[in-house]
Image 1 (cartoon, one colour):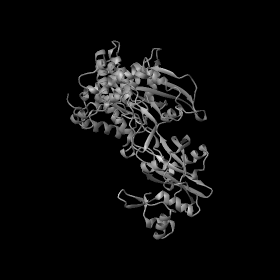
Image 2: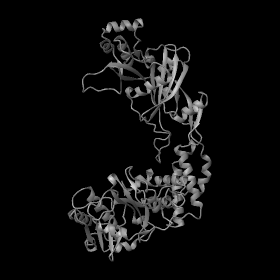
Image 3: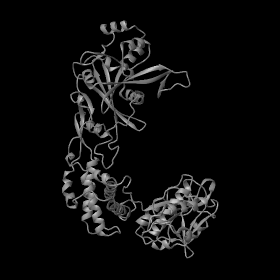
Image 4: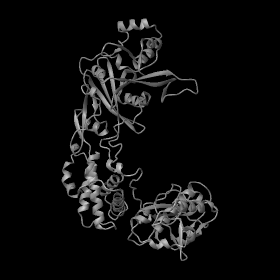
Amino acid sequence: MGLFSRKKVAKRLDLTPARVSQMATSGALIAPIEDEDGTERGWPGTYVEEVAARRQGRQTSRSIYGYSTQATPFARVNDAVIEDRGQRAFVQLLQVDSGLVGLITQLRSTIERDGPYLNSIGDRVSSFSSFGTDLLPFIHEAARVLGVDEYSVAWVRLEDLQASEVVVITEPIHRDPSAWYPTSAREGQEEDGQQEPIPWSTLHAKLGAPVPVLDVPTVEAVDSWHRAGRTHSTVVVDVDDNYNRATAASLLAHLASRSDTYTGSGYVTTTAALKLATTRLNKIISWDASGADYHAYLPNTAADHVAAIATTQHPAFDQLRAEITPALLDEATAPRADRQEAADVLGRLHYAVYGPYGEIPTPALAHALERALDVMIHRFNDELITESYGDSVIRPVFYELRTFERGDWATSWNEYLDALELAPHHRSPDARLLESKEHEHSSSEQHDQKPLTLIDSDGNYVLTQHLRGYQERRFTRVTIAVPVAPLTDRPLDHLKEFDELIVESDTQDGPIMLSINGKLHLMPFGTAHPGGFTHGYWGHGPSNLSAAITAFLEWANGTPMTPAGTDRIRGIVVGADQDRQLRISRGQLFKPGMFEAE
């Protein structure tokens, strides 16, 4: 709200400026706030609103600016953690000579962001709205839980950088249907929360002691303080980002030292990738943070006026340094091609071995490998300088799930599905992935038969579910894990010699088929292609289909496609009949000038 001038105060209170001066002199109003040199700045808007509301006979909570300076420390009355719409606030109720004070601290999750370059607990930038009205639900509930009248309390919000008082004021309900209505209304009165920053020094004086704050406002800090009998406590948060990096690096270092580490790309390549990831993680670990206190994110002017009731510490992780050292390379930076190759190897290790669908799922190693992928994708400053804009490492994707309904109109799909065989007991990650999808259907759908995991001649797994849906409609839902050819560890080179490419009308999330010597095969992707496939017009569906075909052909030919080739593919897709099956012969797709020379 800001500070009100003498003239503005007079207008708000329906007085003359001279009368305002008289009331300030007599003590009926507080003295105006002054600068250090004695220059008058004005009256806090929240305080003026409280005075105006009381003069008009409306209810209002207290303004702490109206409280006298406290000679003795405050007395602690009670406290509570209040929750509203997924957010939580810690409310401390204090007693001073002039009345009650309610300190509100909105709590954040221990980790708000966990990126590779973040080194803190939570998001240091406040993610909460700064409007007093948003605090009304917390104030209402806190008053109920703590057994006080919300209008008898001076409410103060404690933030990272400042404190702000919030005065709850009732106003007559607006009759204008276009008028804005705050979030809370009672008996013909609507409530608004007027908010005004208050200096830490002023709050200190009103409480008679330093302001009790949480250096890091988390639920863990409040719990630790409660367990210590509401005396100062220390909480060690073991989800700190430096700790996570150090534990991930130590696990990767151990993995690199094992001779049985293998992902299909060879032991040497895998070891090199693990060591590069360990070295890059080590570069962004702040080892000095091990066991150290977090520093409260408060301005220097607050240092003498606040006192942390709970201190938050980094966990100790320096002991992991010795485990990481043997796996460190001389240089953490690497060319983009090397980082991409390492990311592909680490991604395969995650997907095929230690991830949720791997051969031996291990959550700790899966998390470490996810960290390894992050640090391969994000570039260091010297890499940003030397590499082209946008030339970054791509997170490896080994499959693209395509889910569709089987129909009589899709003859190529039906021919392909009829040739499938029951998958053997020993399954790949693709099969385990598909099995996890068996129960992903709506509440109105039920299985008519046991879901089956099938396999085609190229080693692709297919999940078929015979379902009964709304109004007893029976249908077959098919889910295929379409491989991304450049990253698969299965031999697919024979698919490069296809005779014809077949796309059903309105394919959407269905597959694209290849005909080879009269037999149908699943077309792998050159890169992952989410989104539906259609043809016969300009739009997202044809664009997705053109991109999928182009990437497949670039993999099959081994060279990038020229702009002329891309335009030709787009022309074939857009110019087709959208109501009919699209069949593209090999001769149409391999014309002179469509691919760059090797």
